[in-house]
Length: 203
Image (cartoon, rainbow, N blue to C red; front, side):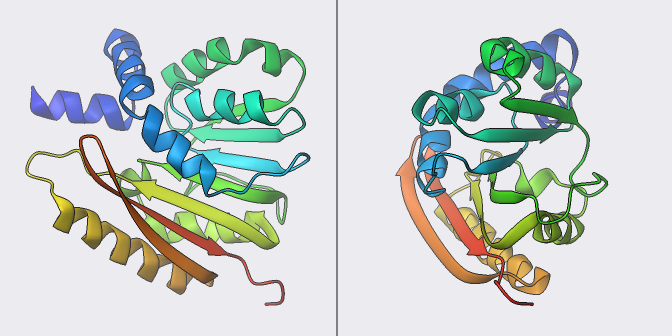
């Protein structure tokens, strides 16, 4: 049963996926808002969200910044349906494009995005290093990447959060990013970590 639940949240589908999407939108609300605050959004930015889930972050960003362009990539077609429903008006105006796929395999446009956001899905990427290399090439020089994680597995604690932060920092360094910052925040149900980095302006 626990295995089924874990798979449902990593790649939601079917009726269980719909329930998982509702839970994620509710439980991750504060986490998403905290993550978005680190993007330092400007009108006109082109954003990529990896793991957009039920679309809460996208809707929140568009509510406060009218002239953003946002692309989303998620492994679940069920989440694509939920997100499309949540941000239907913006979809019609072509402010948002939602895709289904995995970050390691996606063919992302080169030097396209000003900012990239990932909330609570980094540890379920099949190959984080490959995913980061993909994101590195998709960012414009000087572009910013924000990754937020809050462990939810049984037995997770502040030490686990700090381990995640260290691992993400190491992975980002290996991928070629710089201008790193690591910040921790107590958010229910436990400590969360935000790691930010930038793509150098000159390789």
